[in-house]
Amino acid sequence: MASIAARCLRTAARPSVVSAFTQSSVRIARPFSVTANNEVRKYTRAHEWVELSDDKKTGYVGITDYASHQLGDVVFVELPEEGKEVQAGDVLGAVESVKSAADINAPITCKVIAANTSLEETPSLINKAPEDHGASGGWVAKIQVGEEGVADLEQLMEEAAYKEFTAEEH
Image (cartoon, rainbow, N blue to C red; front, top):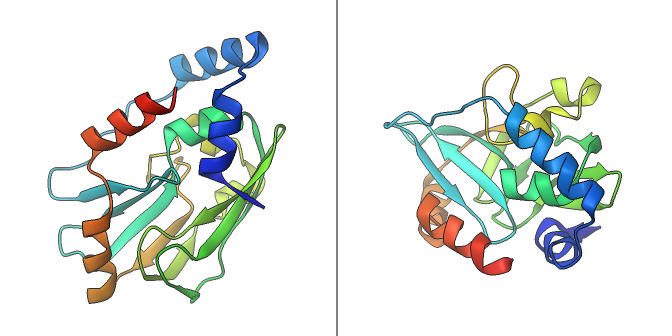
């Protein structure tokens, strides 16, 4: 499967009128999401996000809003197995849309403690709220993090840097 970043680059160069209209409609319908000040959220160049709790021992992983727009309507999500241990960059799961399929990579070294099983019945949650880790959000996995995972955060982008990065991709 192609990475989300590679898929985004291919799609960004040739959006269609239909997909632009659909994406605009989706943006309007997205719920407002706020990250609490005591949580740490970082982004990868492959368009995944990780958000850790204030104690930096647990967190959530998902794909970014940008990636969900580039993928289009998501029709299937392959979730990681509970208990799965992954290194930063390892495949955590996959997402399939009407346009393509892409791997979801682990942003940091972590252990999966839960998967968002709501995505099995309603994969479109990733399109509606990809960066929300609430009950109706499109997060992919809840994770447990050790020292190595916390150290991996240093390699990731803050929100402002990620927004600049995605603006350069257009």
